[in-house]
Amino acid sequence: MNWIKSHAMDTVTFEFIACQSEERKSRFPDIGEEACLEALHLVTPDGRTLAGDKSLPEILCNLRYFRWLAIFFKIPVISLLSYFAYHRIANNRYIISQTILPLTQGKV
Image 1 (tube, helix red, strand yellow):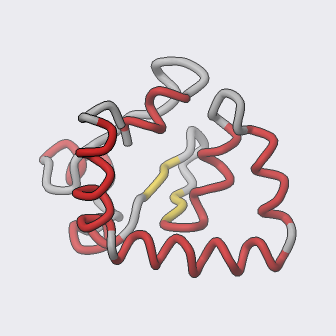
Image 2 (image 1 turned 90 degrees about the vertical axis):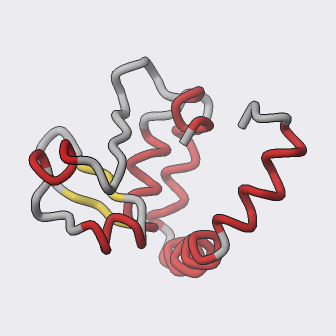
């Protein structure tokens, strides 16, 4: 999440809310805790909820220097590959974070 924050267009583009928080429960009751813990959820300004790999193009559209990558998600093969890549990374996120964090000295 820190990487997304550091590359966002501005400081209010993204808001991160913990899955277990009361704020998430009250503001987004349709996103259950289990679903929240399973995948990243993005709620757009117009109220759409995008989960997991479906949120990636929208996130990229709001990142400095990476906006151009969002166009690749319109290619069916890329969309399919992003599904598998997202789930592979999500299922191993704790192992990955424990590997990356020492290498970046907490500057992720």
